[in-house]
Length: 151
Image (cartoon, rainbow, N blue to C red; front, side, top):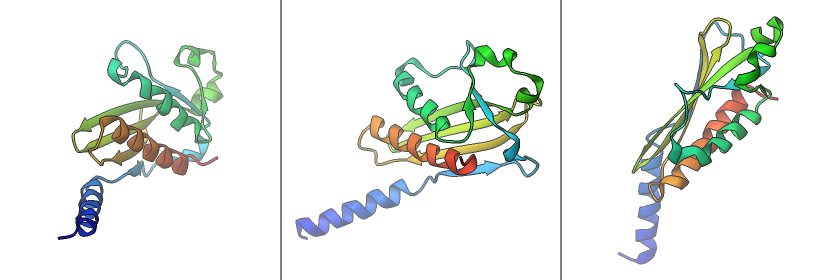
């Protein structure tokens, strides 16, 4: 078999493996996403990103910023008026990483009710480096977020 044929086969295998987990968004049937204007990423003692992934937190904030949602610090939520709090989503994110790829899940929770209203998942996996897979998964999550909350 020629080198060129092996290259094509390798590319096909990588594409098949990376397509096993897909990026997608799930939205609650009862949610009116149009009402939300603000988002606050939860970052406290009980919920925080692992230290080894801190550099990727910047990309996660940028992913939220790619939408129409205005970021509000979790320290300043109490300063918002009640009307603004009714338009606020809390944001939690999770990262799963394996040798085959990465999945980034970003969940949006209604501040007033505590009810999850949307979940955006970005998946990417070439298995070459963890960093590349994680950046790819964040980029795909960003696309899901901007499609779910368009400007």
